[in-house]
Length: 348
Image 1 (cartoon, rainbow, N blue to C red):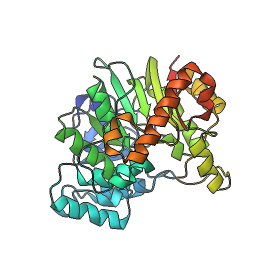
Image 2 (cartoon, rainbow, N blue to C red; image 1 turned 30 degrees about the vertical axis):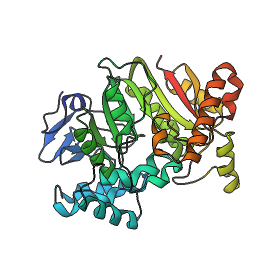
Image 3 (tube, rainbow, N blue to C red; image 1 turned 90 degrees about the horizontal axis):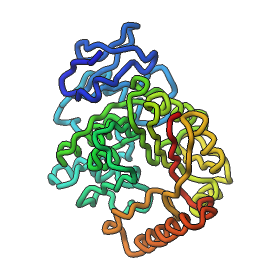
């Protein structure tokens, strides 16, 4: 049953279900509800589909729930939804100061860039002059649907739309999702966004042709990552694909970060590092036949399309990563030394 809610796109409404029991939803005043009485607020046209009775994996999720429950929407003083953006208090003040100058780049994105794109982008915080939209390494979409899990401010959703996909982004941060919606509108890119949890996707089974996720599941415990991958498999159509970036156990940069914390597995929002065999098994068991491909070396998040944004030293690292990535296609054993790989799974 399609949900009739102003500002929710037909592509999104046709796929939304209750994330608890996967039953259909109906429009009520300011919320979506299922027949079992579960209600989910709609804030300025964005459904907030987080569960309020589970432990959250992301700090901003609780703030997103609180803002949605407050009923506050569209106030001038809080239109940036900064209480649900995972940046420091100093950076939040920086967002407001930057917003007063009416920059070409959304001020929230300007302060989220290092958190979403990686530590190599720290020098751009508060100084972005253009959006770092990457190239999506996938065939043209030709109108197929793609779910972007952990979309943050929407860079991969926008990249997907530019390749001809119909993207829907999901993230637990209401502030980041609102930024994604603003950026998509600014760039005249058709994309839909929802606030939700990768472990409890609010979409019907077999809803998507593809699922994509970058620098997201690495922050989940191994149990939660397994749940998220299973949810991706549930929402994929037969023959659909999942393409998910994950950090590896034995990459040079990854080894450095593991050594700094005594090779513990990490807790909370810490990055978890995966053996390639474990990644292949996880995606094969929960989705289907899986291959692993190198994303980059010497870091996580390095994108060739962002070379013009980097300092000379970081461009040198990027060039070295590209050289190693090209070499790995001829020498597959080099994949084991990559810092970041894609798990590309096809649903059986």
